[in-house]
Amino acid sequence: MEGIETLQRWMDESSRIVFFGGAGVSTESGIPDFRSVDGLYHQQYQYPPETILSRSFFDRQPEEFYRFYRSKMLCLDAKPNAAHKKLAELERGGRLRSVVTQNIDGLHQAAGSRRVWELHGSVLRNRCMSCGKLWPVSAVAESSGVPRCA
Image 1 (cartoon, rainbow, N blue to C red):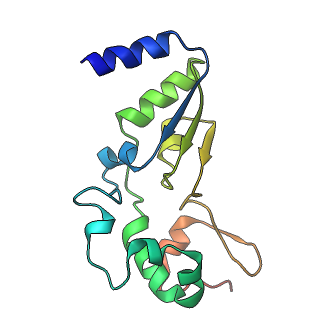
Image 2 (cartoon, one colour):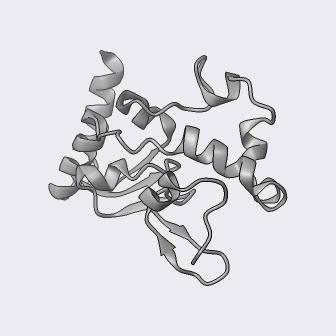
């Protein structure tokens, strides 16, 4: 309880709050993190997740990248949880200036946060590397193999 009281005091004394967060914010929404006991780093894959999610792996083995991306990175049924909603409420009230997140799920925006800085991008924005066309996440999720422009 002491930690919560300290946090509340800091917030009461502050006029420009910026929230820095990561996977722990979205686990309550059913999105797995990487480092916990049940996280992606502790599951067995042919390659480690950090390798699969690298640009060099994407260039060498795009089929395997997209298989992992579809099965583990796209959590399209997830909904914002209490943390996402509270941060959006603080922003609407003028207390919170920005959210800086490592998450790629778009749940901060779905909860109503408007000033969100996504350090690792978003699964909701997919772009063809050849022509630049934007692909909705549903098109990537419903495709098989490597998505290709028509």
